[in-house]
Length: 316
Ligand SMILES: [Zn+2]
Figure 1 (cartoon, protein in one colour):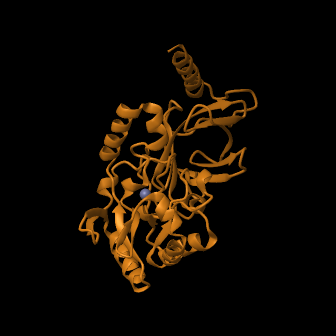
Figure 2 (tube, protein in one colour):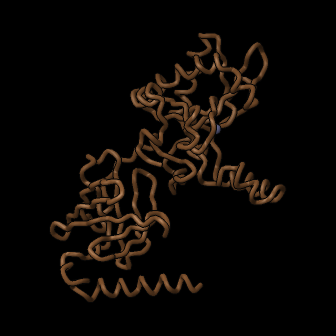
Figure 3 (cartoon, helix red, strand yellow):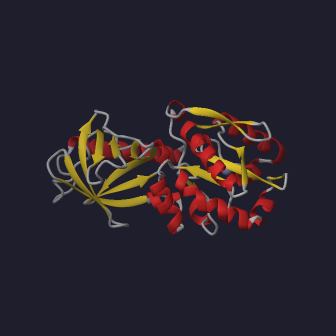
């Protein structure tokens, strides 16, 4: 409580300074807070719409890249801004140079990244969001309102069980499956779309039975599972009439999965959790978990270079 009060006090003083003092420090007359409202990053060609939204109080600002948003606060310190990206611990020093009131260049001291941003006020920036490139992982939550952005369709596996999958992803999966059947390989839907509520139910059950630590280690946090997107498909194999759906048994089917993975990209899928990329994806090797990204060209680029979606998007 004391800490919160201190933070609030500091914020209030800074906000006061920003509002009342034209020059925060001698020699820093040009250092002014960002205008409240939305600023768009202009040099990226609008492909992956990035925006900063600043508030008058310098708190509860947000940075959005594509569909993922990260909250941050900032403060003015000497001749720099300090952005607390995502949490109070991340003190990224940013040098901002205003070129007029509505254009600004941000230089991130740690990475050297330079961004030109432009004020668009309260107008909703025009952004064309590609839902198929959404990043949902242990750091990136499912975007709000996701259910209204996708269309789900029902697929049936040969065991007669029904599964919800995003419509285009399901169509592509059926083509992938047919192509593999011609090679004598039978992949079947095993786990697909999962609602946040359902994931919460699983989490609560584990927490009740085994405790919070156990749930944290073994259960995806509700809202942070790629299965919420409808674009992730876990398959099982049918080999010589036998169902193979145990994780270890599937990992042992190296030859079959090598052939399956070789066909993913042409139908717009990637292997989402490749071997040896645990540190980046947050998951161990899962030869059965495919992710639909819609573009066979991008899928090929990702699969051929052996990178992850995180690496392709340049995000954590
Ligand atoms: Zn999965």
